[in-house]
Amino acid sequence: MPEISRFFGMVVAMYYQEHHPPHFHVRYGKYKISIAIEDLRVLAGKLPPKALALVVEWASQHKNELIKDWELARQWKGLNPIQPLE
Image (cartoon, rainbow, N blue to C red; front, top):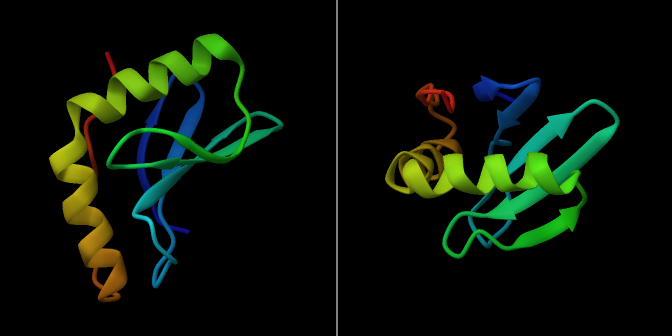
């Protein structure tokens, strides 16, 4: 699973040829979560509340980049890194 960003111990990634809706995955210690890009809702998994808030903040700032990476992943093309949350 290609990594597209990393911040505060969280790893953000996308799978190639993934199912809809467009989404990304986050790993944080023992936690894993999938989040829809369009409305930032949790599709599966769980994160601690503070970590989830940081991921949602980051994703809202980078929604266009996430959509572009989703489209690249669907075509089996290399994904672009996205700036971490600072």
